[in-house]
Amino acid sequence: QSFKLLGFLDVKNIPCARESVLYGSLGSLVMGLGHFLATSRVKRSCDVAIGGFICTMLGYWFYCRYSLAQQRIRQRMLNEGMRNRILFEGSYLDPEKRQTGSERSDS
Image 1 (cartoon, rainbow, N blue to C red):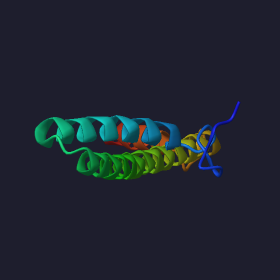
Image 2 (cartoon, helix red, strand yellow):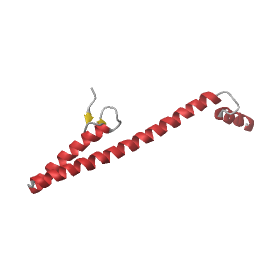
Image 3 (cartoon, helix red, strand yellow):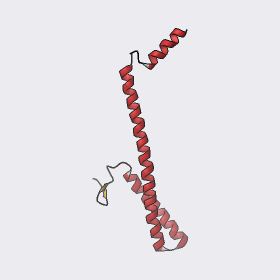
């Protein structure tokens, strides 16, 4: 079952959306309750809670998406390296074969 936030944000299928909403909710609760306990002003505490939700959600969203992009880049580089390893293995372009050949000629 898919959960859509605000009718259009599909939380289940978008990477980092679920965690961002959960951490935003927790940040909202902590900041709003902390402000209320410190000042006893209800309306202002609700405003702080909404601001805390937005800031925490966006902060974690950008952090998570940045980490995901880095992971995808590393995965792409690893896949390309494995493909090149399979392609060049045993040929004259193989870096390991070239290295072992030069070591033998030096000895």
